[in-house]
Length: 236
Ligand SMILES: [Zn+2]
Image 1 (cartoon, rainbow, N blue to C red):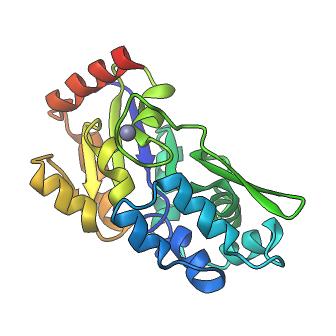
Image 2: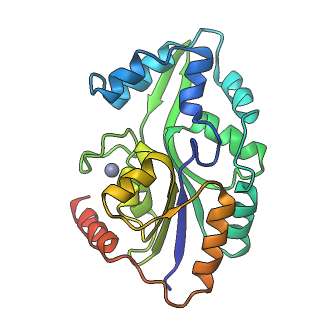
Image 3: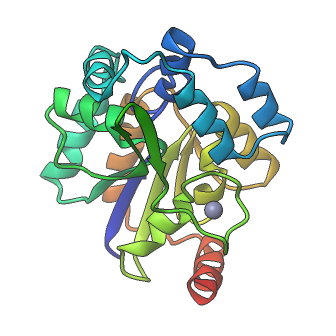
């Protein structure tokens, strides 16, 4: 098998809740913006701008970091991350959420060495400044940070890619991975699109399958994913 690289979503995957929803449900305003995003009245950047603007003035970066550090993480994520480290498998986090709360959660569980691809939020002179380093026009996947590009950016072209996710923002990346772990709406999407995938509930399940994959001599790259990756390389 070629070099294995593992990418995992963050919200609802590493954390039990979607912190990118919860932050605004708890402290700001979530609706009608979320419904407007789903009905395409807002694009994803307009959506994030409105949500961050809805936060009260007293909510600053430090407040969000403290709040995030208290959020629940999948009970087996740490075992999974340690397994990857022990087996020299590069593990990266790919998120359409924000560095601010992702970094706080990862620091809290001593995993801040993990590479994170995400949007960025900073508060300057009382107003939020949001940036999207992975935004791309060559992919039409309608998220602020195209996860496909995180998968393709820093790995060898013949790498064996494993992707773990749960939701809408993972639809794009799943099509480019050799092995997909999917739950919730990502599992439905993979089923509909006939993308082979492993269903998972916690990182316990992911780890069990990963061990088998690494011991197996018969795991092959997924042909459709390879073709898509070659096309994406050409278009970037
Ligand atoms: Zn994309």
